Image 1 (cartoon, rainbow, N blue to C red):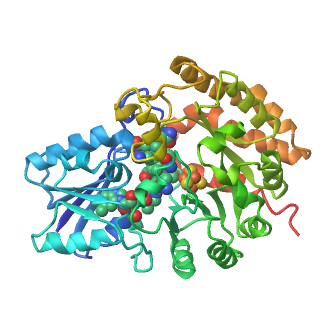
Image 2 (image 1 turned 30 degrees about the horizontal axis):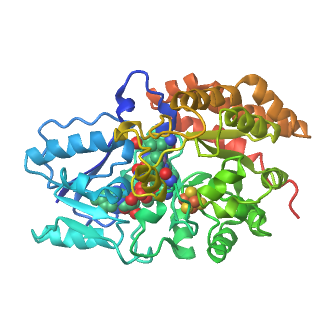
Image 3 (image 1 turned 60 degrees about the horizontal axis):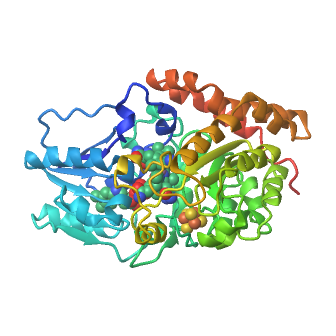
Length: 458
Ligand code: B12
Ligand code: SF4
């Protein structure tokens, strides 16, 4: 059987003004995971439209698998329609399809609701017998029988972070704006691989650097402790995402650092406590954010702080307050989003019921555009403030001030190098990506991360 798997690009990726760095970070791990369920004699090709141009020609594989995100849904449907018009069976699944299965079903022969590990192998068997159904809904949640990810199908040289990895699914929390509860409805919403399987997957990855894309790698303490114990001594340096409460929990972070954690993406979301209550972000309420940053820095872990603008408690002053706070804490990198109610989430339901959603142009549900009517400012103020926040936080002045909060000279220099490298040298990254040399930058990242950590443990 010949199978083509596609991660469609969001519309702007095909524009000459597209800034490729963000989209050349991670390979299509979801598709490579699904490819693991195919037979050795199946012929399979993964196309990632963010890094290569897909030429349809008159290609007629037996099966096309498409994974749309909300912002790439339009393109995904275009491709699906094109393949179906020539009689090819199209299967679609993932987050956006799960939120809006009826919409996706207009463009696919088969749609999948929820994670694919239980339904996908059933579909494959049905399809081979010529009895594929229109819709498969996941109910049984386990990673225990998951085959190894088909990393051989990933074109490593096209990505800055080819060693991305996920060893769990979901998260133990229930924030109102998050995709998670909708995606995992009807079954468990947080589960992990067995520790041994996760360690075996890590062992298969070359080089030193890893990026865990798990929503919350520290979410299951027993699993995390087992994983970190197995990883310590492997010489890996890695990045991951975690919540503020897990950073403050005693003992776990130290073990992570010992196993090679050097940078953590932390969802602070807002500097405004009322917003946290409104969004059900209970694990953040009343936490001392400064203590979170201090604890990470004391252990030599860089912080990528994530913030959302436009919650109902936010007024026009929120942008400067957030940036000033981040800079004053010496946070190395920050990621800002405009609040975006995704279909299927509690937030979307609330906004929709209140008549506050502005349109359904999914292309603009990219967290850079305002798609709902904000309460504490106008949509224009929100978009301008968002852009200003990015400009301000990555000005050299702010980078210097952030670096100056670090007591040791070495730490200051590292802050300058890391924060500067991401934003100030973007044209250099673009040249590396466009000339497919981006993998050569990986040793630099490994060296930068390797020089962090391990200072104050013990
Ligand atoms: C890495 C990542 C990225 C990377 C690259 C993605 C890539 N190369 O795959 C980058 C940085 C480019 C990125 C960008 C964006 N991202 Co992003 N990203 C992620 C992240 C952190 C991990 C994705 C991943 O690898 N997961 C692990 C794999 C194993 O899971 P998976 O991809 O979901 O695939 C599984 C299932 O979904 C299912 N499945 C998927 N497809 C199919 C198809 C079939 C047929 C079947 C049977 C099953 C199936 O089976 C797979 C195996 O388990 C997720 C969060 C998350 N936890 O998923 C957000 C996430 C996917 N991103 C999101 C968003 C919003 C964006 C952006 C729009 C906005 C932004 N400001 O970042 C942009 C635009 C993306 C685009 N192209 O349109 C949202 C998606 C919301 C939605 N409803 O679509 C998520 C869920 C984050 C969030 N919490 O809101 N992202
Ligand atoms: S902690 Fe993060 S991943 Fe978990 S529910 Fe909240 S936003 Fe989603």
